[in-house]
Image (cartoon, rainbow, N blue to C red; front, side, top):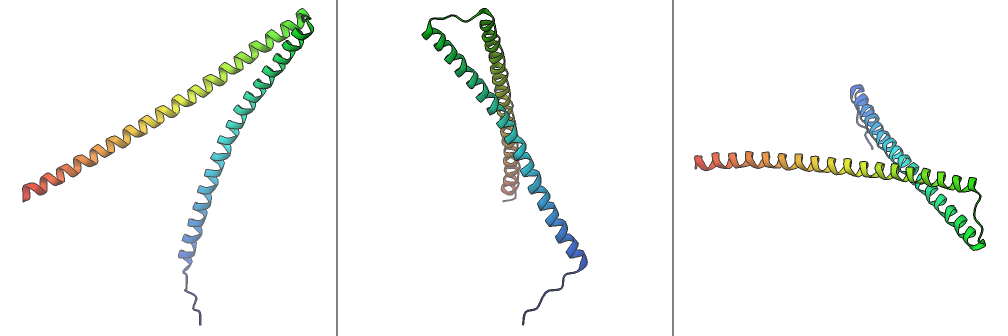
Length: 137
């Protein structure tokens, strides 16, 4: 015969709280992943848009060269504005990426520095313990 263990009411509340905490942690992790992926998706979509603009510009220029026709002045102005906008967006994206890389490198270096300091402190403590033991002997 199977016996079911008796769980007190306090124990039941503790188990429910633990399950809720674990669920909350999983929810927070998923939220952060979604937020990071949307940021990456936005950057990639801007880059794709810029590449499309480049392809259209190349096609227009090659078409113009093949036909031997020049574009009217207002279209040349539009192309120049498009090129300026594209270069501005590219510089902003490049600056954004370089800033992210700088911050990641800085964060990695500081965490490594703290890890090394903690290891040095631990080694000093062990050294002191060994010196105390050696003095006793």
